[in-house]
Image (cartoon, rainbow, N blue to C red; front, side):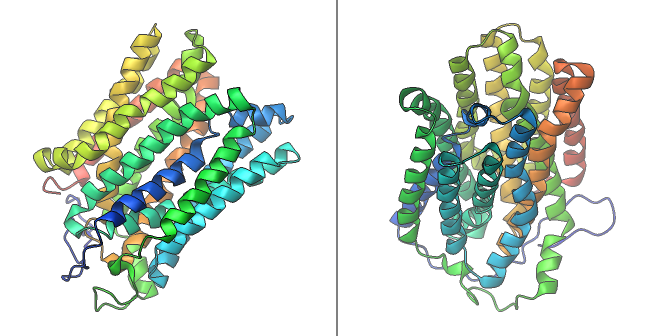
Length: 410
């Protein structure tokens, strides 16, 4: 990745990727990979709607519930960069994906057989370790396509991601209601096992093999240069701001606000699942939108949409109005996140992409962790509405930063 100088020039993404392209995989490979990716996200989200109450039923106080939920993000914050660097140094992506599925399976079983509330913290940490595999998953899938199609590839990958979350968050609650609180964990473990079988049949992308596609030598200094490139740090911080909004609103306090409007438990689950539908729809459309308007305009427009939606939330007095706002915000999150993720690796040499993706995902995990933490503190101090106003203001500020630092030609 070519970096900017110390001036205030916009981030310029100019390619230093190898000139030779990897052989195209068999047509069935990306589809098989996507099936494994779907299993990965299903296994991580079946129990998300019921997990806090499951912990409470085991006798966990709210502090332990909070520690359990935080463990997921903290592990990713700490381990995603090492995961990416190790994958690049090794030149392999597939073992990272398989390792994530194994950790997801182990975490589900740990939840199901947890002897006490604190054991749930360790189980959630295991699932956070599983989520670190997303570093290898994104780079492995992108490796099946030419470098200039990275945003399109990420869009289709995120479509399976979003579909898995939608299906799992809705069906997990149904499973728990029909078969008991352990059922979502069983479904998670079984699905992870299926995913392991599917991914085991996927070949390693030729780009990712040691020595393939580039005459450059992988050194610690080169990986460090990639990891600290201003262009990468810029898009990563923008993604952290966007994830701050996601985890302080739709995955944080929007359900709390909905409950104040009188929503039932089933309506809360439906609200969360439906808010992910426009996010999923945005994934295959993002590359075309970028081609028409440019990445800078897409990111600025997406952050603006997220910010205004957050500010509008306290003004909603009915569930219909709240759902409409979440639909708009979901589309904004979809195009913004996919565009930024594509930019993070678009012009990085193939043997260094996992390092770049590890940095990108570790930095945006800061937003995942701080969103609910800071939002809760703001809510305690100034009321529930202040969470949405402050989140919206942060997004609007980020639009100015995005306009200044992103190259209009990117």
